[in-house]
Length: 414
Image 1 (cartoon, helix red, strand yellow):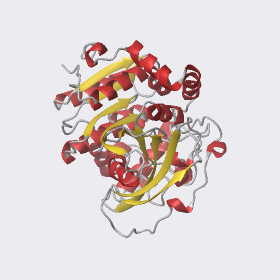
Image 2: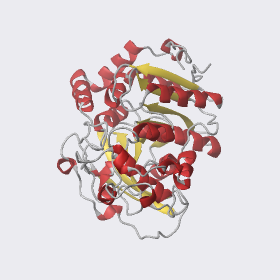
Image 3: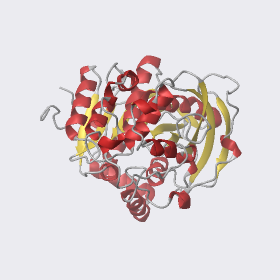
Image 4: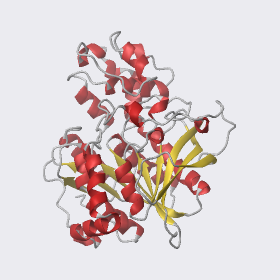
């Protein structure tokens, strides 16, 4: 696929790198920016290598997150309750609010989802704060793994920067992280549904939010951001403006088939958990070996599950696991680029991404282009997710500002 995507001149969207960095420095101050990105540089790129002990960063699971199961049914996107919180370690001048709202599970059931909304402590602009919906990276599947139960929301420096630049940030936890419902780990479609319905819930809680919004996602959340774009292609919300996918966009089937023959990877166990939640008739024992089953039990109650040296990839998976009909249905369900989005996308990857091979990312973007979507695909310096996230900041903000300004969306699809 080499040479499939031409290079793109960002001056076409009206904001060059130097101007963006100057604006960021003006808003945040040199010291704040440096400290924020220093923290991001040490951020985890996988839930299995915590930045600090999670217990040192964790917040208590309070009654705010509790709801009856089953819920008194309501429409998806309806707000259940909200509260202001001073528990988070964020930049000065930002207010944080927890929200709890209705969404739909992978099986179509009414579920409660938690999340956080960040707003600048400044006079509200005419028309309200423009909104960035955040699709978080994979951080585990236990209830207490929710980003809203972490003092810095897992990506506090980045989310603070968005808010300091004049955006409200709506960050869904996804169903089952925070609330007492099964979490469909790695299921792009249900996680994307939770992000979509976080927007009307956040607006119901905070009237200062404007109608226009974009979505941005990171690592596993980058696929969720594409899932939001595809969902919005069906819903047709005129206020939805586009998606940013940062580091690691690829087809789930190809990613896991790439992982399976290699060293043991706990993500294979999370995959089994996600399939089981999405398809309740799936028997995990048909995919995982006896050696992997204790890990499967552990991930439901712990955010810091660990592989031991005795595990290998082949020993965790049963032969022919990928041909199980529920596994095949899960991969088909989560294939990206199956339907047009009708909205622009910015896809950012590292020049040598350690998380996902570049060939898989390029092939996925090519499939998005085949749907006649307006995709801008760029390579940023860095070989891991946090470096790509940090080094592409000017491109992100340039693209976001252009969408809210109503400029034509750039594309370098053939």
